[in-house]
Amino acid sequence: MYFTDRGIEELENRRGEDEVTLGWVAEQLRTFVDLNPDFEVPVERLATWLARLDDEDDE
Image: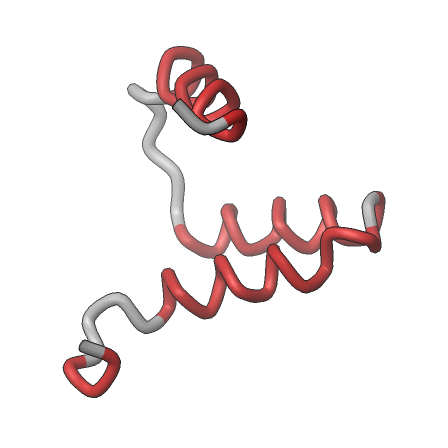
């Protein structure tokens, strides 16, 4: 188990039944980066990866 799995599991356990929009997620990511600028690159990579999940060119 990776260390990040703990946070992912907590997210799933606490918020797994919530329904949110991707607009809401994007706003939360922006707020997170504003509060934690050192995480700008990893958040950008995650957002880009999520945005391109269905792109056939990336496979």
